[in-house]
Image (cartoon, rainbow, N blue to C red; front, side, top):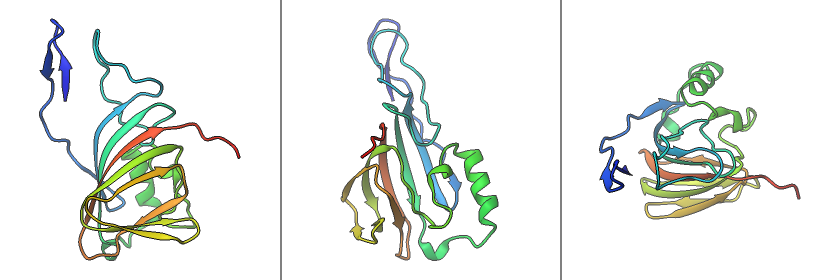
Length: 169
């Protein structure tokens, strides 16, 4: 991460890796986030990261890396207990998911996703799917969707989430 020193010169402020958090089988790296509204840089102190709630409000951003395990590796433990633990450790993550449709969710955000390793399927609410492989970029615009890793190895996705206001149709 870069910042400015007291003299206003550009400096490297942080050069360390984030520690992953594993919840619901997902390995999540919360890299950086900005508060809701307009992000501010430049004069004065730059704000610290705002990683939560997991999905930003209007104008907020999140930069995350998610490693999806193969579906065959998913846990068979108590799903309610796992969801509660995930919500405790990654506040705001589980509230968008549909209890009767595993993995299906809708967020009030524009999400830029890039597959950097492995493969995954993006499913939309009508059952349509696209196969996402390394280098594929996805722009998710507040639509109902789910991610499915049907391969035998993990898939790593990098996301930038930008909070948006949902408009009625």
